[in-house]
Image (tube, rainbow, N blue to C red; front, side, top):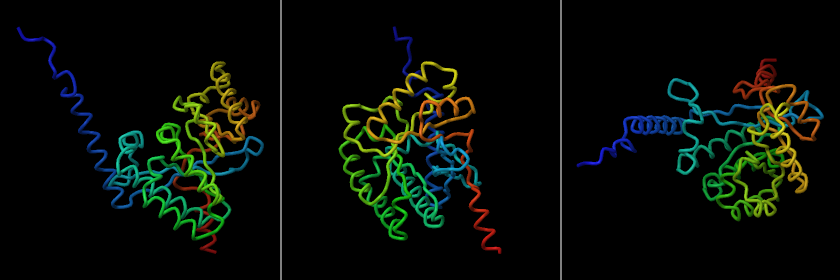
Amino acid sequence: MTNSISLQGGFDSPLSAAITERDRNTMQMVRDAIKAKQVMLAYQPIVQTLRPDRPAFYEGLLRVLDKNGRVIPAREFIEISETSETGRELDCLAIEAGLQTLFEQPDMRLSINMSARSIGYPRWKETLMNGLAKDETIAERLILEITESSAMIMPDTVSFFMTELQAKGISFALDDFGAGYTAFRYFKDFYFDMVKIDGAFIRDIANTPDNQVLTQALISIARHFDMYTVAEFVETKEDADYLSSIGVDCLQGHYFGAATIDPLWKHHSAHKIAS
């Protein structure tokens, strides 16, 4: 008698095959976009709690476009690309676009995301150095964001890399702080300039006592290590007010502005050229 449980219910199931095919198609679209340089940055403001009326700096978020000019949602490819050559190429395009923006906007500070896996990627480092050479003030206006998950893959490499670039004036942010990846035995060896508290703790924090306790603990750790704190995904006035009251240094989220590919300074630059 044959076993009634078929192997077809596993990886060979129609659903699994459909998901695999969709992922393959998405990655091909991403590779095509990279080849055509169909990418751009969207800019989201980050404000100081003491000066919420104007951005302290911006985060540049890479947007990848399909052949029709529509944004391919990052969630559909970011995890798959992280461990591949595609991920390294995306990091190169992000840093290249960010450095060009800093060159064109001499009063701006900008954070750009990168994976720790790109540290040893020669083209990424070459792109960075070429951009820094354009203007001696760019390094001190650049913030590199590394997620907890990728930093913990190679803590020694990340620590050495940060020390090398901090000597040039570049700042570092630990992204998704508190998401559960940090091994605190390594944390004391990192010298991040700031931590970005994961949005899972921030959403509706004004009404969630558990998140209040956890966020205050994360702030306490950051203060002990002299790290600036940024709360991500701040969506309401109540959450912003609460975070200000417990001493978060900076706030980021839709309450202060969504990420946009059409920031105000582009219009100001166009106006200057016209006049």
